[in-house]
Image (cartoon, rainbow, N blue to C red):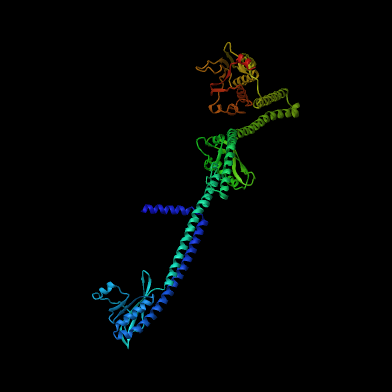
Length: 637
């Protein structure tokens, strides 16, 4: 039973929820109006009943007084037969009297109308008494009136005392039937009111059901459909078979959804392709790119930005960009990002030095992304450029200019000083002094020329100029180099050693550049080797490594000396511009550009210079060159 009641209650709640607010308000207004009208009707019915009851009371009291006055002399004379006949005639002549009872002063009934045969038979054995009201006074002459309800309506009971010559003879009880016209009118009014009340609510309920089925439900279906369309679900359809304006509205809605679906299908591939192109473009650009929305959430990030910020193993899309940036970057750009999101500025630029994940210098450009009307900020584009190499080159450029200026200033100052001395005091100087001054000027001029030539050579090598590499005979280049430095070695008492493998193959290279490399390395060896030392120049073909069929054969060139050697802490910087060992030992002069030129030339040959050195023992420089393949060269041509 409880389950059934619960089911009914849920059904009613669901049914009620189907109605719109307007329908609910209409039902509430109908309920209030129907209750007010019903209340007024029942108040009118109650007023009519009260008036009828009052009339019945007056009529009963007057009738009781009249009967009591007529029968009192007969009862006083004990002429009960006449009393009975009078009462019978009176009872038969009117329908208003329901009953008439006569009782003596003790309340014992001795005559009553109507009476039936069974009552006559039992009248000798049954003693009946009239129940007088509690507040009835036997000595009063005013009748007592009350009402009681019977199946035929309310009956008015009138108790009239019977007195004759001041003597109380008993009580006459008369029952007065209700007024038939009043009863019929009251019942009719009540029935009509109930019927009208029920009819109104039946009509309201039927109207609500019809409204829910024909208006509310389609409108709700349309509302759901519109929400689905707004959410991007263009497959939504409404299948209610309705006619009229609602049917036409549903038909137009379905046509709109179908057109949107076709449009989406036609453009989805194009949109996907454009998105893929954009993502590919962003992912392949050299600079880092991060796109965020107004709430600092990452929308798009390319691999370069992930590498710079160390995001390779993290999923940052959808996360707050400020929570994932390195601390120096976060501190610099946090406030400008919020200002740009609020539309207070359109762009900003920062230069930040990072230590994590690796040491580098970056430039960050912030640019707002505006809508088509360029009124609202839709997001912020963060461009990240790794300018570490640029910073290093600028620093190297500044250092290079400073070093060149310093190196040029020293010989120029010496040349100027000695020339001025010769010009001002030439006649006062002896022949030997003037000759010494001129030798010094000549030496400083040679030094200046070497410096300028080295700077020009290094500038050419680093300018990006391409050199055509072909087959080079290393044996010839080595022999020319040793021949050039033979006299210099003899003057310093240093032995030059040549160890070149017989039948050495040609190597891929540029003859003049390789000759410059050999000259610089042999010259350095002679410069830093004391008398009695040795400088050796070796060239031999390397044995191929096992399981290296694809690697081209190579020739190794070594330049060794027994000079002062290079300290371990200097070996990393020995190839830097203007770095000179004499800066540490304060013995020999040089431009400090020779090994930089060597490294640049070997880089042009797609190889690398290595060194092994020990202070006081000597130094060995070596590099490898690829063997020249004449057949492959002809094929390429």
